[in-house]
Structure formats: structure tokens, C-alpha cells
Image (cartoon, rainbow, N blue to C red):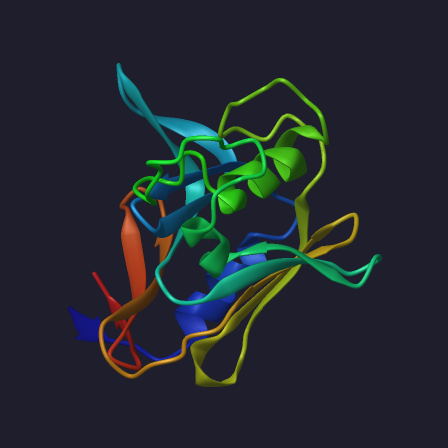
Length: 179
């Protein structure tokens, strides 16, 4: 990895403008946000134009209603429709986070259980890099994704430009690095 200044990250965040939040999924307690169209990687796989993998605290706010929709700690809470007494957080399944995210992606009471956004909403209105490497991504019509690193060790987030070539900008150990 090579250390970088914030300019390339700011440029990618600008390029997110107008792109739809297309997919949200878990890899353990890491949340993966995909923005833009899905590009073919090979005959069996696609990848969104831009990815944001978040390991540090985050939340999605409804700015119109003045409330938190969901956040990183909801991964550890069972969903209201989860009646499995043996449930433990593993991959988001059955969590309050997954439940709220599906409502956001598909509308309340939707039977759809896909990680892909079918709402027709949630386009990036603006995105910015904040002091201390926080991220603020405004999603239309009235949502805000806030990412706020809270430590000095390990990886906080990873912003991926699928390219080609694919480039990863990583907040690790309180420094921006490129892979």
C-alpha cells in the first residue's frame, strides 16, 4: 500500500454524484454499499461502478423525519420479525440492520428480500470527505449516509473505483492508502 493525500478520494466522491445506491450487503459485520451500474467482471460476476466497504461506525438518517433509519450497531440486534431464539449475528440475516435496510431498498412491507435497490430512489446528491476521514453521502430524496471512523488502528473504510483498473482507497491506521 502507498500513502495518498485526500485529492483522489475527493474526486471519486464527486464522481458518485447522480449514481444510484444499487446494492447493499453484508460480509460479516462489514457493510458493502455499491453505487452505479453493475459492470461484468466475468461470465458469472458483476461489480458496481463504485463500492464502499465500511468497517467503522456508520448510520443512515432520514433527514426529513429527523431520525436514524439504521446503523452499524443494529447488526447485533434481532429484527422484529426474527423469532429464532438461537439467533446470533453472523452475516446480517435476521438482524434489525438488514430489516431496516430492506425497508429502505424496497419500501415498507415489501415482500422483496433482495440486496439490490428496487425503490427507484437513493441517488447520490452529494458526497464529501470530512475531517478525520469521515464520509457524508447525501442520498435523494432525504437520506444521509454518515461514516465516522472512531479509532486509530485497522481499516475503517474502503472506497473502490472498479476501473479498469480497479483501485482501492483505504482508510487504515488513520491514514489514506491506495491499493
